[in-house]
Length: 296
Length: 308
Image (cartoon, rainbow over all chains, first blue to last red):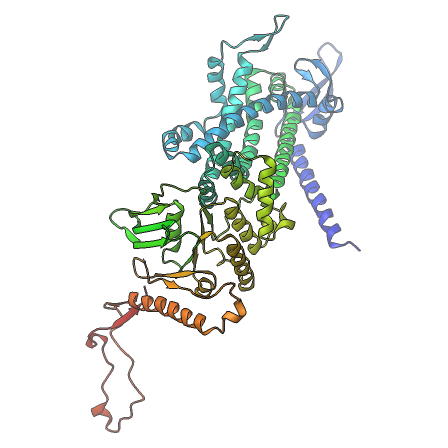
């Protein structure tokens, strides 16, 4: 074959992942239960079809079954047939909207806290234990607390329908408090890593505090901050599923839980794939922005 | 003689906690007159940066006082322009923006046009007009140091402090920059304190050279006045007997101090208690003259020279 090295590499970079995916699907197919339909004559003399599932995991749908069951959601991704029966991209959009709100809340709170931690030794000493204890707490634990905290929140539109209630506030609270830690920690580390030379320049030029912050500290910390932002976005996307499951909000996670309760197992697999793909795309976008920032 | 613009009186400075404190500088006294170019020459690690950081106000002396125009220095300020050894330009700002940061902070009342004219003037002075819009990482080391010099000059400070400004540059770039700075100085006649580790550079540029003697802690040595006429031509000066004499004087001062600070430490060494036999000694009556291996324990003491 007359393939150049580049073509070979490209072929490999397409072929190898494709093979791996195929392999996984094969294993999935082997494990999955298969429907066996038998025709029987029952006691009344009628012929009836009896469908039985058998296999290693009898309830797990096969890849083909998953596809046929999910087709409607993928081929018509923006359809709205009901509150919890919408096209998959419509669900994704709902989830993303909530994630974006919670995420920006996380950045808005997390970045200043990170700066304070990095700048003040006393602040850092005081709050470090609290942060270390709160950091590993699961979103599932925060949500009920959010519900209690914001139980009085109720914003209604003209028609008397609640547009922003306790569960919305709790969802935002949970996403923000879980997603902010990487931003807090990375910003603090970045501020501590600002070279003394830059700070000396600020001192010699007698820059005011605000000017030192905006002209020296923030630009010097930006690469660290952005790494934090990226990790935070990943966590925000992880949290959204848990939040939607618990609150029953329409979205990818809510759909997943509802379909589990409805014994519609194929849709669970669809949701998992969509969640993974969206997470991957978000991470790629952030790292693209990050690399842009580093060369700037 | 006019009143000194900058003066240090019996200044000492040390580092470390109270118990294990090492003094870096002791009993430094110096007076710099208005318009004077003073060079401080010393070995690396002898406290030169500590010295200039005290002048800049980034460090506080342990004892003694540092005065500017007769008033004690309490902190860093734009009346003392500082050029750092590693340029210390902010990498996210262009050449113009780096200088503008200084100008904005020193002349906050100026109009925008006034500021940009001022900035352009100093960029032109260090011959960087073409690179005005570039970021520091797009510039060579020499160009970066020019920006740093322009930034310090643009602050229009009373005194210019330069901390080994050229030691990170290659020899040719250094020579170029020395000539340029010398030229700028002759037209502006600003008061300059120049720290360097290069005796030639000091003599070439300064009115007065003061060696920072590497005793522990370091002290300032006898000042050497440089009466060489300006402008000083680099290639001609190398053959000038006066220049040679001055250089010898300076280098001898520094070397003598180094010699003095070298200490002899005697200590016992734990080594295998044996020394090789001296086979080369001819011995006719073998068993009588030739001794067996010498033992180290028989040697009384060893003197080791340890350079401090």
